[in-house]
Amino acid sequence: MISVTFDSNVWESVVDDTKRGASPVYQKIYDLINNNEIVPYFFEGIVSLETIPKQDRKAHIRGFKATISIQVGDEEPNVTVGTPPPELSDYLKINIPKALKIGFKFIRTPRIGSHGIDASADCAAKDINYPLKERLARTFEVARYIESLGAGKGKLDTNIEENAGYGMVEKTTNDTNLTNKKFAKDIAEWVDGDAIAAHYGYGIDYFCTNDKASGAGVNSIFSATNLTKVSQKYEIKVVSPEELLNLKLPRA
Image 1 (cartoon, one colour):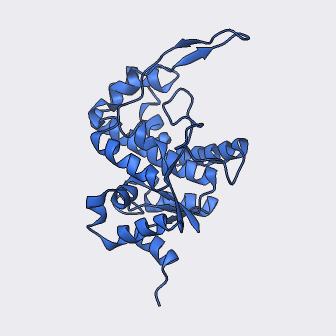
Image 2 (spheres, rainbow, N blue to C red):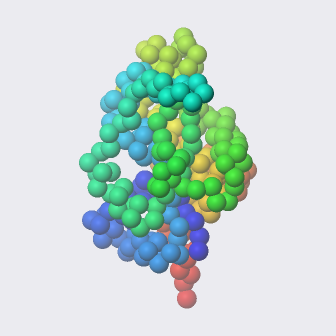
Image 3 (spheres, rainbow, N blue to C red):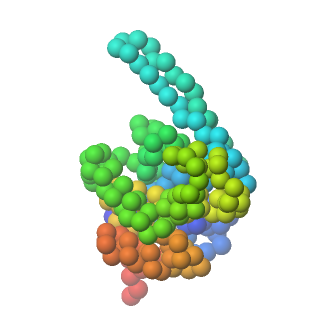
């Protein structure tokens, strides 16, 4: 049995009946999951930042307010409700339940003040390989390294670093440089970087993606250069769906 984090460009093709039928590769992966030979995971970013429509991502970050809860002693907590989480797309509303039904769990990179899966939810991955404190330390060590390469969240940080303000919300509010399209692409890169970081934090065996060194920009975590650096430094195993099958189904 192996554990695998699936990128969106793979898990959707495994779970979605119409996409799975288009290729025997995804059907075989689906069967391996159902036979408990693969323990599947996906990243919480698909239901938070990534599900925000691209044209709305900049406005969402600009207007983001965190939910704050203050409790004194045994008193009822005083909760100030912030920005609600983004609504799932119709596609995700259909296919995430299918993924959860066959055993997918969400892995997390908890950012202060951001949306995310409740750690206590049944759909959240448990800390099996490392205790919480160590898992978070591992996650953010890799996240910071990815950002130092100008990838992951570091790409957006670089593009708005000269804006007046101290946090992402304030800098986004003051930004006049990034178009909605460019900002949306940087958000997607942020999600990709945090997905790799979470994958390492939880100690999952393989990260399966179709983006591996294919058509990625030089500042992407999936560019050949950046992916090689991160993979070698932290021994992260990134494979394509075909390579994953070769691990589980060696040729005679």
